[in-house]
Structure formats: C-alpha cells, structure tokens
Length: 509
Image (tube, rainbow, N blue to C red):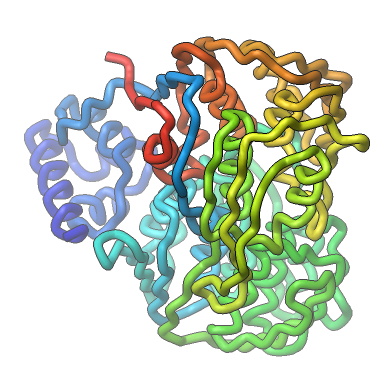
C-alpha cells in the first residue's frame, strides 16, 4: 500500500516535471538535492514527506497533490478542559533515530517495530534514502523495514534533510567502517545554543577518524592503522556521544572499553539492538561499557524500541497543569524514578501499577494514574543530571508544573545555553517566571493561565511546555509554526484530543 502510494506520487512528479520541460538535474538544483534523489522519488523508491511534496509542487509550479498546504502548521487550542481516560506512551524518538543510524552497520534486513512517525525520523529516512538505503513502512505503516545497498552513495546525500537534524552526527560512527573518506553536512535541529561536537571527535579519533569542518560540511578521513588499544574516556557523558562511540566500536574487530558512558534509555536501547546484531556488550546500564565488536555484520534482525520516558513526562505534566485524572500506559518507570520522587515530594496524587516488560523484553514498564493535586514548590532546586538523575529533557516540564504549585521553584537548566530563556515564554500565558541568567529561572506559582497567540519556541521541549500551558488556559490560544513539536511527537494534538483536549491543526490560507 505504501509502495503504491509512493509510486503514484512519483508518477505525478515526473509528469509535472516533464510538462514544465525540466530535466531531473534542473529539478534537483531547484530543490537543493541530487539528481539521483529525484530519480528515486520519481521511481517511488524513496520516502517523501508532505513538506517535500509541497516544495516540489512549488518548484514545478504545479499542485502535485491537494494537501491544503499553504505554509507552516499551527495549533488552535481551546483551553480549560479536563483530560480523562487513558493514553499510551509511544516509542522513543531518541532511540529510534539512533537505531536508524545503527542500521548502517548491518548488510542485512532490519525491521524496527512501532517506530514513531515523526519529522526527526522522516529526516533521517530522507537522508538514508538519498544515499541508497531502501526503507518502507510495513504492517499498515506500524513498522519500518530497512535494507542497505552494497555501496552507499554519499555524494547524493540530501543536504537539506541532513542539516535539519542533529542526529546526522551519528552517521560518523558507522561510516568510518565503510569508507576511508566521506563528507556529511553540519548537524542542525533544535536551537539550544552552542553545542560543541568535540566530545564526539575525541572518542572517534581513537578509531582513526579525523574530521575537518569547512563550508558547512564535515570532511572525514580514516586511518585504519589507529585502533582503540586503551580505554576510551568520554569527555562528556552525553547520550549521542556514547552512541557514536558504540556505533564505532560495534564493527571494530576487538574489544573496546568506553568509560564515563551515558546509561540513559536510548543508549540502552541501542545496546540491546547491537546485541541482536551479534555484538557482545558488558555493563549495559552502567557508565563503563565493554564492547566485543565484529568486523562484518550481515543479519536479518527484528527489534522493538522501547517507550519514550520524555513523552511520558510530557503526558504527566499535561495531567498536572490541567488538573486532570489521567492514566498513562506503558510508562518506562526505571527512567522516571527521580521525576516521580520529586513530584511525590511536591504532593502529587498518583498510583503506579505493577511492572511488565516492554516489547524488547528488557525495559520495565508500568501504568501510571495521575489525579488532581494541590502541589507545593519543592524545597530544593530542580536540576537535571545524567541518568539515573532527573532526565535532561524532562527539566523543562517542571516549569509548567512549578507554575501550578504554591511557592517559588528554582529551575537550573545548566546543560543548554538558551533553553531556560525559552521557558519565559510562559509569561505570555500568565506565568510568573524570572530569568536569573541564561541557565536559571525562578518560577512563582500557582498560575492563573490566560489564552494568547504566540510563535512556537524553536526548542522541542519548551515548545511542548507552552502547548500544555495553553491547554490549561481558559479561552482560545494559537501556537504558530509547530514543526519543532512534530520533530519529536507523533500526532500529539490528535492523541491529546482523544483524552479530552480540544486542539485543532491548521495552516494559513
């Protein structure tokens, strides 16, 4: 079904291009991509987003498909409604993008179950498709099948898609085993201030990778004589840094020890997947990983990534700020223990059901019911830490929760330069947040939320925090240009509507 859809879209694009009298090269130049990518699109062999279809239509001055697309997507929120019922947590965005990058290690067929259909995943699939990797949605679009080519065509890489995701940096680890020289575009994604990639380079140099950055592109060369003979000590306990080191170690034919490694949820999911590929890993869930790599990987594998603790935290915060009773199913509780302890200390009324295994057989899940509660500000500041501390991506949600509590709460978001600044957008909705410096914000509560129209913050989690506050505010709010939310959440408005919210998606005419 999906293949037929792609083939029909490809035929329409080819007809429109020929009607205009353009070659594939001319269309590729107009889109900023390669002729081979256009060729795959027209043959129905590449996943293509609605946004890309609209761009092609604009370039060819032809409405390819009637999409009602006239600009960015916005949300109209009728707030003040109580949520009710139950909602399932989707699979992890951050795990899925790491697993997609990891498929570059494997010459065999990979099936990933229940992959989140989000913009971040679509961007990675566009990049993979542009370099020759075949992917298709199967089982009514629930699962994703990926088959790599014998030889990747990095010269054809989709530059625009690659620059719209920071995850592209995780191509470095797998690619260093496939070619001696290659180029990939700079990484993009959320606007969170200056984030150095040096920790990645420090780890990957131990595998012989050297990278120079010029004109928006990483130019990589690999010295096969250099091997990680001593333990690799990561200079930053970052999730993607650890994942890149793991991806490089997976096909190093020997033993690699990685110290100061992240043990966060997406890293563990990646480890479980690599084990299915035949890579033996000791110390999963700790800060020291010992990886027994294999030189070649050619396996047909089937893997189910686990649920997303950050999405679970989003839903918990939605219930808190709207003063609702809501059951959140399939919560990965081992990655939310600190968050739940903090909320319990603030007075949250909740029940946690018995634990059961995720579909990967390793991650512990439980169902969580949240009830309306009178919250008090915590005695200590809220500050994230590497796992098993309070998740770095969950810290922003405590701004909305603290604004619903009685008293003053200090949130110290020390990781990113800009993210705390975006939290002050809540003041437009009636919040009382004082920015003390680029990393600290003081939140006064409780808050009488009020409706407003505003632009979406350019960072994913603060954007969702603003949406949650709009759901709590009486009246109608408008949140404009929500692409950043679609990067990390699948059908969020529709799913919140299923439990009582009233959110409408629309575009400018």
